[in-house]
Image (cartoon, rainbow, N blue to C red):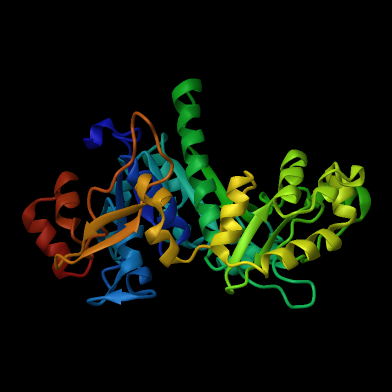
Amino acid sequence: MSEMQKPLAGLRVVELGTLIAGPFCTRIMAEFGAEVIKVESPDGGDPLRKWRKLYEGTSLWWYVQARNKKSVTANLKHPEGREFVRKLIAGADILVENFRPGVLEKLGLGWEQLKADNPELVMVRLSGFGQTGPYKDQPGFGAVGESMGGLRYITGFADRPPVRTGISIGDSIAALWGAIGALMALRHKEVNGGAGQVVDVALYEAVFAMMESLVPEFDVFGFVRERTGNIMPGITPSNTHTTKDGKHVTIGANGDAIFKRFMRAIGRPDLADDPDLADNAGRDARRDEIYGLIDAWCVQRDEPDVLATLAAAEVPSSRVYSAVDMFADPQFLARQMLESARLPDGKEFRMPGIVPKLSATPGSTEWLGPELGAHTAEVLAALGYAPGKIAELKANGAV
């Protein structure tokens, strides 16, 4: 598929972001056809280039997070570097930034200045606490957002301290809200004839928005949701169980009809026909009993037997996948969720496929995360900078 057939083709997005939240937001846009120009410091660029596992000195994560993006360098402490970035944003549809509030204003790149240059601009601002409020000037990483937003408090087991999820989920959720907000702002311009606007995403609010019934349950009943391990409070049975061979299987049998099939499949027709267990409220009242018997059934059988029995009974279940499982799974392979690509030295590797799946205008990977500043000269030339001026800007440290 050509770039012009993708749903975001024709959009120019400027990224002033590092690490996770801002770059993940623009990655989504780049995968679906937007021209994303990532502005990096000439002094090493995005720290993500050096995070986690490195191959030949570059993070494998970088190659995925920056796929389909153009990299330009600009020294925001240099007046000509700032002038370059301001000209670039003046011709953009969307700007995504994740600096601490006030930093861009001090550089002359705040909303008021940019709006004067480009009234149609949609500016996505991702920060720990948002652009207003008493905490706005405090540093706030994803871990803080997850804690303040309520996620960490309810994650883990009741007899142990809170734990983090295995990924930087707060940053990623904020990135998704940023992409959604940007597209809503563009829709407003197209349909209502509106001008550009700011999309203000606070990491703690991005997490807080996912907290289901936590707020009304506390406000109406004074109920404080606590850590409950792998079960779903008030929804039974839904839990993770250990098999005879030491594997872990998640079973979600909380539908009324599913529960009946499940009980018959594990040899407990008496519980399938028990009127007290016919609905969720009745099952939840006896959840310790139910989970105990499921544990006892699973621990007597190896994982393949458990999964085959549940599949035959049409009970939702799954092994708890590691990367090893994903690479061998036919569903991942059939839906192209393990995409092959080649690193700069030609080594083949696999990376995550693109989500969501659009039937007519799917996203795709056109190139991997680029070398630092790989597109600087190209972008400067497109803005009207002459070759001699480009060389001068590089020589004086502006780019």
